Picture 1 (cartoon, one colour):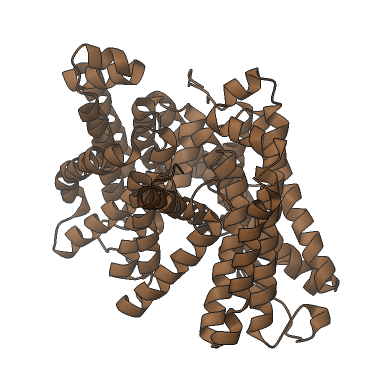
Picture 2 (spheres, each protein chain N blue to C red):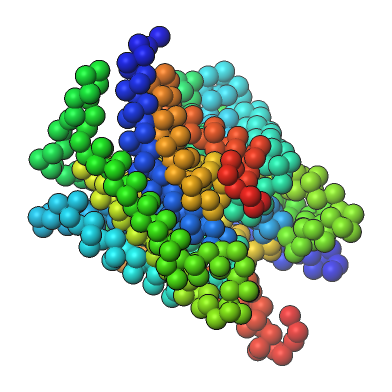
Length: 322
Length: 289
């Protein structure tokens, strides 16, 4: 694949989405888009480890929360500059990924065991953040409202939208370059058959470790941005199971182990959720119930997600081999 | 420090709670032992069972009576869930089963939330606050009943597995799926029966919990991670391991609640969980990795 064909469509999609605030500038819509992009980022992170590497984490909230709490606490407790806090929070998230990855891959945890241990780590973090006075306990943390560019706070939602979009596009580009690298090929080899990959000389432990670190860093970016956008978080938001679920759901709906999958999945999910809310009214839990149903239906009927369906449809229409 | 009396009382109370934990864990470990998957919908099924028991009480049926109807009903539900939803939609791939059971748990939990909102409900039974005086401490009657009934349910389950033909078929499938199907065992049926037995255990646990606990659409979550811990500790797939693990975890929770305070009481459980997973993923009694 030439670089143009590899990276062109990503930039094109980014440019198309970036023009959106000029046509539809309602705050409600922009707000929904920012939230969908935050989820897309978390999902892109999950997709590196789960989609390409086949290691299903049920606890990506651990990394999202590290990013979110990191940003918020460094600013409120230590008066660190917002951008420096953002960077430090992402570093903290990737360190958490490295540590959890080291512990669990060292003990050879795979499949359900890995899913369980990630879930447990996220829960431990949630309980600790909920009880520890330093993290604000159950009351949570509030970042002081101070709308200035130096504090990473903006009056216009469109600016947040462009920043979030910029992050998503940048991660898509990283994602594509991973796909085209030797590291990406090793990762896919591990997903397809870990023992065979090992037999062929792939250092599976270090590849998985790199993958979880990168994965955690991206999800931490999502968390840090979330904190910066909403300026409030508590343990159930930052480390709650909802984000772990959305992070894994979006790639599965969109297309596992693809560049566009997590983004399409996240945007699609939020579109569907908004429609459900419009139809069913504000019934609590109804959107999540729908997500769960979609998860089962996708696993049952469309293992390759929306991307897979599109590829199949194109092959049928144009008779080309996809 | 605390007087030995208080510690002994905490241990006894822990054992009472632990018996119910053990019952929830037995269902989980049974499913793991036979299907080799972790049922992430376990907590949601428990919640559903607690709601069922709650509404049974609403129409005037005591949970201790309702259990005799709910256990078979949940057996049938569990059977149908595995036979018609989980089995067909996962195409026999472990990764898919993981996702399908996660999806089911999200659906069940949130439908309950949509239907009943996040109100916390509890029932008020005449024996709710009765106690047995042991001289140095009091034991609450519903918890003693829960302890005894959990032991009885575990014994019945053991009898089913050890003595009946279905039990033999289940053990055969757990050991060697292909061999079992070669000698004429219907593997899909055995899977579904196992899943049904797991759900029935949860129905029993729900009826035992209700008199002293509350119902809430997310109440199962509190139990499911505890159940995971017990299963991992006792060895995935080991029924005696789950029973001992359950009692042990009950005591650990009770003691760490006493020493660390209520809000951190659960931390002890999670730390054990992570430690066991990292150090000895086969658990204390499990043989299979």
